[in-house]
Image (cartoon, rainbow, N blue to C red; front, side, top):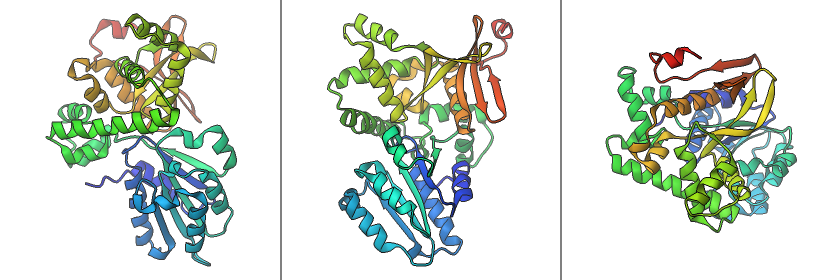
Amino acid sequence: MIIQREQYFNKLKALKDKKIIKVVTGIRRCGKTTLLNIFQDYLRSSGVTDEQIISINFEDLDFEEYHDYKKLYAYLKSRLVSGKMTYIFLDEIQHVEDFPKVVDSLYIKDHVDLYITGSNAYMLSSEIATLISGRYIQIEMLPLSFKEYMISTGDMTNKAEKYIEYLENSAFPYTIELKDQPEQIKDYLEGIYNTIVLKDIVNRKKITDVMMLKSVLRYVFDNIGNPLSSKKIADTMTRNGRKVDSRTIEKYLEAFMESYIVYKAKRYNIKGKQYLKTLEKYYVVDIGLRYMLLGSRKMDAGHILENIVYLELLRRGYDVYVGKIDTFEVDFVAQNQKGNHYFQVALSVRDEKTHSY
C-alpha cells in the first residue's frame, strides 16, 4: 500500500523548480524513497518526460560504482537535458564519499532541480553543511502520524482500538502490509533496529563496546519522558556493573540522535526566557520499536502519549522544548514564527492532581 504523505509531498511540490537543493532526512524506512517515487510520478503526470528524470538509490548494488563522486558527477552531467529542466533524485547519498562536491557542482548549473535524501544527520554536519550553506532546505521526515495511520486503514472510526494498533504495530509505513502478523512485524522492526545500530552507529562512529551501546539505548527507550543527563545514565550503568564515563554516554546519545532513532527535548525556563543545559528529555522515533525492544511490560501509557504528542509537534513544524516555570514543569513549549505555545499532556483529566497544575 502506497500512502500519500501529503505533508511532505506538498512541501516538495511547493519547492519544485526552485533554485534550492531539497534535502529529505529521517530514520531508515520512514518513507523517504517512496516519497521521491510519488513525486516522480507527479512530475510525469505534469508532462515531464522520463529523459528529464534521473533517480539513483545508493543502497542498490546496481549503482555501487557511483559511490565514487567523480564517476557519479560524470554520469549525471552526461544525462542532463539541454534546454530543459532535469530532475535529479539521489537517495541515501551519504554512501557517496565527498558527495557535497557533486551536489555543489550540480547546483550551479542551469535547469537542474536537485533532491537528495539521507538516513543520518551526519550528512548535514557542520563541515558538509558549510559547502552547501544557504543552498538547501531540509525536510525532516518521520514515520506515520496517527492520522496517517487511520487514513491507511480506510476507516476513520474505532480510534481507541486503532491507537493501540498504531503503538504496537509501529508507525513505519511497511508494517501496515504486515497487519495481523505480529511475528513478521517484530522481525521487520528488529531488522531496522539492527541496521541502525550496526551500520549507522557502530560502523560510522567506530564503537567498540557494542553491548554497552545497546544497554544505553535500551535505558533511553525505557525512560522516555524522564529527565536524563549523561552523568545519570553513566552512574546507572556503573551501578549495574558496567563502568562507563559521561563522555562516552554523550557520544552515544549524539549518535542516537544523528541516526534519528532518538530525539532530544531541551529545557526552557519560561519565566527567564532561557534555554537550560541540564536534564533534557528524550523521545523515541517509533513506539513500535520500543515495544519490540522492551516488550509489553514497558508500555507506560502516560509517557507514551507524551512521546506521540512530542513527535506530532515536530511534524507540525515546531521547535519543541520542555518548559520550566519556578518549581513546575510544562510538558512542552512549542515555538514557531507566531511565538510560544504551551502543552500539558495527561492520560486522563479525571485525576485531581492533573487539575492542580
